[in-house]
Image (spheres, rainbow, N blue to C red):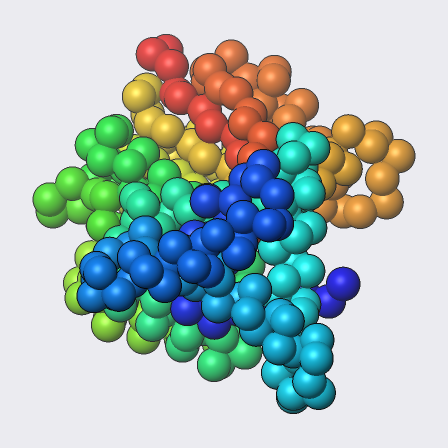
Length: 318
Ligand SMILES: C[S@@+](CC[C@H](N)C(=O)[O-])C[C@H]1O[C@@H](n2cnc3c(N)ncnc32)[C@H](O)[C@@H]1O
């Protein structure tokens, strides 16, 4: 099935439905329709539960109406319902489909990450400029912010800026008086990122450097920019082992290094893979495993970004 782009209202609707519908048969919908209508009238449509009941009833009503008419909205609504039904089926089997991971991400993000105009406009501006949608998900961005806060990071290095989405999260987590240096090979990406960072009010504390990171990293060492407290590696995966080696040189005991996208739909375990990114991650993993100056682990993740994972390393006392 092609990926369905849902509006914010539809997403909210699907999330409410999912939350309330797990494991319940469809005939409950009719009860919801009636109860929702009654509750909605008594609650003056202010009560979220009544709204959710009513929403589900409306969807069911739409479905019946659509099936009996030839409205132009029919395919849209039917695919929305199909999506919901496939998620519900998936949940009853244990919840392993990407649609479910996506919905669960939206559920938690809806609860824990308040809507943020600056970050949302960074995504809109990046998409409008034609940048690929390769930024971290909101919950991953927040994790970066939390890691920056937990490690009291003042000097942060990012390798791979794109439109500056993760850069903004990192900068928001850094300690007073800190700076983020972010390395980006593509001048267009860097330009968009500068705009986004500036709109976030962070232009003074974020330094976006254009050029191949493998050339920029030795310069950072020459300029004595380190030691960095936190390094986030998220550029071309084939060079991950080189970036990791540089991160270690530019860090100190207590520094944290995060390497994104190390699971790659599980293909990381394919030693025969012809994908340079997979081989890059495997070279990184060997180096990571052999490096006695760090203690680290890898966490697999599923969510709106599919099946992937990240490595996290702590620099040890020498
Ligand atoms: C996955 S995106 C970064 C996403 C960003 N960290 C975020 O979450 O918002 C990878 C970025 O690395 C950049 N890149 C790729 N190869 C690079 C290199 N050799 N040096 C510096 N940047 C590079 C790409 O142009 C792209 O913008």
